[in-house]
Image (cartoon, rainbow, N blue to C red):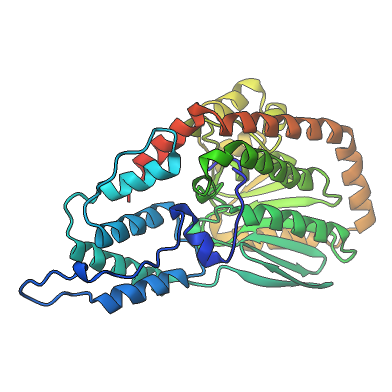
Length: 398
């Protein structure tokens, strides 16, 4: 949704998947799960155990709502009805887990086991290769959430988690910096194009980033997160070549705020733009606190950044956020044609003109970026932010 909340990814993707739970869900199934009643159980002990193993082998993150549901079903299947006290209001992870388990009420252990196995089967069946290994003219880059290609002078960076609406993980922030640094240093690259896979441009920050934090490490992790966010935004401020964004669908949070750092923004007529910072108890980032008032004027920027007004593509164009709105049916073809044409222009002339235009603003943008990141440390460690996040998670359907 909004800015990065800098948490560490630790271990393999299967380990990452279950950091929210504090341990991997591999406990053996107790014989007491099997109620010796008339009829045949639809799920056996061995099937339930196999489902746990299969879950731990998944490569893709199914999202917080599904993970909470899986956690709750596992606890219900192995323990029964929720039997622990409700955690305190500011223990976000523990309270979310408790709420998910408690919501199952009197569901039998056998029913929970059956639902658990069913969800795992669905996840395994839906799993597709979001991670791409992309090549450049200089060699190979391996990314988990981005696709990077170079062709005819155009470096294309594609947010590549279509099953998750291209939500940005912590890994992707670092990958983005690497991709832009690579494109900037590659002499064969004239300009860079950023877009999203599937129907979404980007749904903002993956809220799983908010769920893997130990409350005792909150300040330390917030500081680390602010530094990673600062590097991410600086990679766009300092990019030495033209930077074009093709917003192919809805955009939220960080995907919107950084548009002010692009040189050209094309938007599909299906695109929408939303910055719901207040809803999550947070504050703007991506230098938007400076660039948006410059583009829109203070009143319209305030309506957008402070109060979360969602804009359609035409409204974003009218406010100066978007360069051109293109019909969805012709969007990819039109953007590709424009970018290929631009890439034929003299590269040194483009680079020098871009730097001339940006140079007068660079120092100010860096200062704004640092100030926004400093404020986010305060926001992420505040009781208000914790309450807002807890409210958001409690309203999510399991």
